[in-house]
Image (cartoon, rainbow, N blue to C red):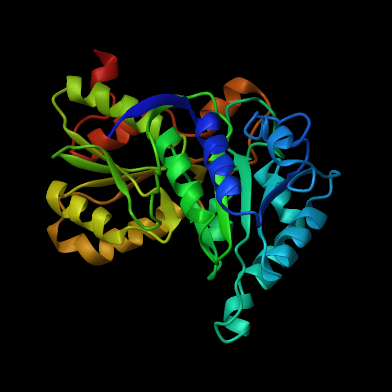
Length: 335
């Protein structure tokens, strides 16, 4: 299949554009997403193409936006609500948790809520504790929600197109530092199904599971480890809910070691739940305990140096992999 290189933000825009063209019930609302094209330029050009009824700027009123989106979805539309940033999705948690996530169950399976919340999270810009959080664990914990965290342009496009054809609420979490990254995206109709993880790098010695912006960081670590003679398999679940348990378990059974990397702080995180799955399914076949590399249990610092120190970096992943192999985690650095 032919491919072309796109930025992550361009791939997202292409997905929205294609689905808006196919389905007149798809519309998008958010702060600055119309005339300005969004803070990360994902929606640039869509206002001119689809008009202000389907591409609509809103006030800074997250609870209102989410409420409108959930109500419109229940009424039969397919809204995309862009929240700038995930930190402020907390203002609409009642609508997300008690309305959108529960509606299908509370209508005996008859109700549908094809609601998409696109939002940005993660560290790296020095924008302090209220604009830098990784909150996927909050949504992961709520039955009824789908949680999507693409790491590449191809995954971003394919997963968003798939999301826009589902009848359940989807938390589509993008990392603010991935928007300018580039990657090859297949031409034509490109769909990535939920619950299908991807092996970003094949290896034999250790399985490393990561998602979102931790994937490029983990791949850098895998390159360094390869130079040390260590073969790392990098697994990207792509969707946390549903989770591709089979891919994870099969990889760990092959390598017999597992490291899980999340940007979010460790306490109560998705990594801990995945670790419990690995322990339940693979314990008797493993040669080392599961290692978790995660952010510190602190608010994200404003200072750039402290911010960097508070979340996993390449060297942290390298050290964790070496520990899982019972090697000195600092030996290579010392050399």
